[in-house]
Amino acid sequence: MTYTILRGGRVLDIAAGTANFADILIEGDTVREIGQPGCPAPEGAVEISAARRLLHPGLVNAHTHGHGNLAKGMGDRWTLELLLTAAPWIVGNRTGEDEYLSTQPGAVEMVLKGCTACYDLSFEWPVPTVEGLAGAAAAYAEVGMRAVVAPMIADRSFYEAIPGLREALPAPLRERVDALRLPPSEATLAAVSGAFRDWSFDRDRVRPAVAPTIPHHCSDAFILGCAALAREFDVGLHSHVAESKVQAVTGIRLYGRTQTAHLEGLGVLGPHFTVAHGVWLDKDDMGRLGDHGASVAHNPGSNMRLGSGLADARAMLERRVNLGIGTDGASCSDNQNMYEAMRLASFVSKVQGPDWQRWLTTREAALAATEGSAGALGFGDRIGRIAPGYKADIVMLDLDHPNWLPLNNPVNQRVHTEDGTAVASVMIGGRLVVDNRRVTTVDLDRLRDRVAVARERLAAANADYRRLYEALEPVVGSHCPGLARAPYHVHRYGARLD
Ligand SMILES: [Zn+2]
Image 1 (cartoon, rainbow, N blue to C red):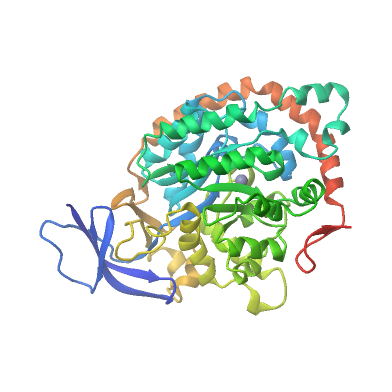
Image 2 (cartoon, rainbow, N blue to C red; image 1 turned 30 degrees about the vertical axis):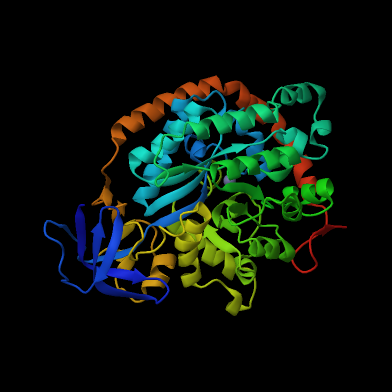
């Protein structure tokens, strides 16, 4: 067994709010001991200096989309529904290699910005493929990052899922969107099952999960099929629930109750279930999620960018929901910076009311972005903390960087001041994947060239889908806000439509 010892650093203890000097002994990929400075190490242990470094557990991104990285910057004033309308333009005509080339820039960005694991809801249209999922998984494995790769699937198109939308389209556009119908659910579930059966990646590093994309984009039979797959392969379930008001209103219209109440009725909630966003959850929904030990991936940046709203993280914590934090994908919240996501989680809480005692503390935001997100990924007993028995996923911040001049309070500064620019080195499973601000595992020049070629080819191949988006934008862009104007009461009274 190989030993590594990190000497001379200050180790952040989020719960205690301290950053005391300590040496960290690592055996293979696991932290063995946190000792006094200068503590003895086994013979032959590799010594790494962490002098003038603040060591914190790797950040864990509870919700992103690797397929979004090739689409960064493609839209500006997009609601969630306009983003979904743009999907064929964003992800059309992709190969398995394109999935890899879309995922890897995000993985590189995340590790450079102190994130060591993520939950990636990976989308291939119209159905997931073995090559596409393997491409996404390989992108993370090569960078050396941990990931849960969950194919995002459905059996209803966006136009079938939104009440009245198809009927609101002029006939020629209706014909075009009818051609976007999804394959039968059996074909999609069989494709996912086949990919999971052939999974060749170390599940300690890159494991699969299932993501029925949005509840009302899926028939109940399809959701139950996803849950059965999750059980069969012992993997997580992750869905966008109550993200936008359009979704919340649609849920009530379709189910006569909230999406979350409906999911509970189907029996699919549990500790393996993660709700993405949860902006429009009412307090009963949060209670349901808490009672089932489920998680919420809180994506404050995306929720503001798409105009979805401000999620009430305090109310979730009060109901024992496991709270994680995510960036969401690059097509809707742009960068993959978990420091920014943590900071926004804190700020979004503070802007919701004058009762400052209900605002998230920096400690709560920091714990959500590590232990909370790790729980959502199903890695809760192995990552998210620097402690004996946990994986050696450790970020080293440069205390000589202006962000830390001076060091007053390590937790407040890590959440509110740090923006990723002080990340000096990042270790994942005992291996330095970022060393002195450079990624050690992949050839960035080669990646850049391959991404440029893919971008050009896809822009040409999807030009027609772009025109289709432009034709649909005015209709979707007026129909969906119309739905969202429905009076809809949440939080205090339980969700209902008037
Ligand atoms: Zn998402």
